Image 1 (cartoon, helix red, strand yellow):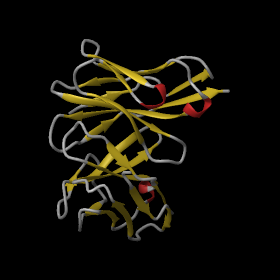
Image 2: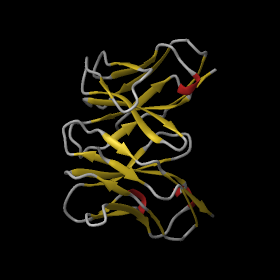
Image 3: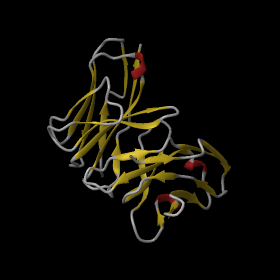
Image 4: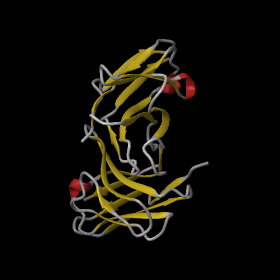
Length: 113
Length: 114
């Protein structure tokens, strides 16, 4: 079965600190995505990747970087965390082609104090 | 750019009732439409999808959705809900490209009263 895991599941960070959220998929999917979910906004795309070595900006990339060192791993990096980045972050993977569904991880709850 | 609108933020029904969760989209090209479910504290899970052919598509757990090009809609329905169907439901649009970028609605929270 398709599997996407995220770590950590919960994180408390201080303003100005660096935060790295990790995602691993065992689906052998080319595409991976980072979303944040906030009340009233639904899911918003931060960064995505078409394969190892590639990262692309999504709809709300400011304040975030992404890294895709391998097919399986996709990280989201907050170099200088701010309270406005307090949210639940979801990673997803998907195959190539719009007909294929996305598989989501369980989410990471990030609180920036 | 595609947009997805889910007009009802919250829907409450009793167990055994039927339910329809509405989704409207705007996009001029060829698209895929799908629904996802999110139980509390979990990630999203795929329910069903439509691209072409029969406008009524069946999903898991008795859910179905109907595509209407004239109304730009893709409403989700279930004939008889169970308390375990309580969750947030997201409609999504994906353009017919190789990159599978999805645009999600804001979600509809369904509460089923036992």
